[in-house]
Image 1: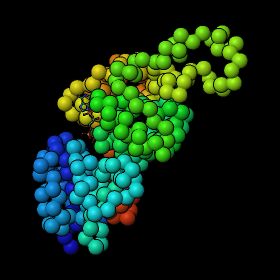
Image 2 (image 1 turned 90 degrees about the horizontal axis):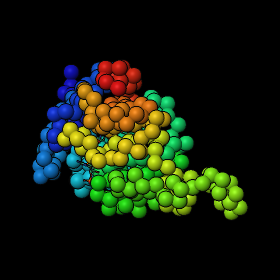
Image 3 (image 1 turned 180 degrees about the vertical axis):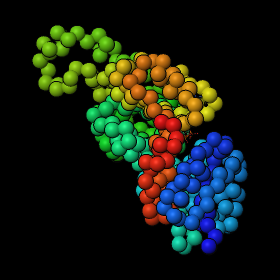
Image 4 (image 1 turned 90 degrees about the vertical axis):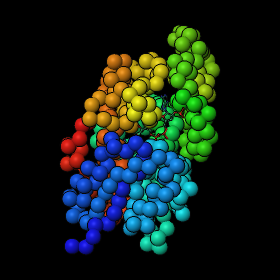
Length: 307
Ligand SMILES: NC(=O)c1ccc[n+]([C@@H]2O[C@H](COP(=O)([O-])OP(=O)(O)OC[C@H]3O[C@@H](n4cnc5c(N)ncnc54)[C@H](OP(=O)(O)O)[C@@H]3O)[C@@H](O)[C@H]2O)c1
């Protein structure tokens, strides 16, 4: 049998990654002759680790925390969605030996939310917490759906504001600090329903979105945690008022046990809380398809991992 073609995931830390297990199942299922390893590379080692892996015959990489943005400078080309996201989670070595950076995080999340969990995203008020590589990867995909409202909140507000600017052509996103999430527009809070009905202005809004920038309420339909705080075992100071009894929470982070964000979300009384296993599996299937031109069926591997 010929030597297996080499693939890997690169990150730091990487011991927690389940990508090698997932790709092993995909390889067995599809009969593709591939190997898949995990490479631990600190930021200062990224360049040498990628160069070495490719020199040894590597055909493709998955890229995870904290390299999704830094790896861009090692790419010869980027796909449009990686360019828009400003983040790469999949590297493909092309026939001519050049490296192409792509991003399957957005489509992976979308497949999990819509197909696996059955959510109707277009009609939702969506909050994304975090503005790192993963948030960038998913925001353009979410913005393209033109949901009812799309808000991004980050510890470093400037990063969220940058994303709002960069993605302005794709769809309207609002940036907030964590503290601002607890502050509805005062006019909205004080709105007297009778006053609203009597108001003869021709503003056809429903009365809960009082100005261009005002939030239409504190609770969101879908709250997605895209911070990496869970890797440190913590939950950032998110205000509990963003969660209501109908809110679905989704943590991009995943663990064999409950993640801190999922524990926190349940304590706020959310309707449902999901870890990012489904996204992980679906983005991996999309990467596998890019490399091997065959998309594995994800049903089996989803049954083997927690939900
Ligand atoms: N399920 C999946 O398939 C999947 C795919 C991609 C990523 N992920 C997960 O998503 C998470 C984020 O990944 P990433 O690539 O976006 O990481 P990243 O680029 O390093 O960004 C980290 C983000 O988390 C925020 N953050 C970190 N620690 C924080 C803290 N203590 N308090 C508040 N905010 C904090 C950062 O805020 P500042 O900007 O203020 O520093 C930044 O917004 C990771 O846990 C990763 O494993 C999962």
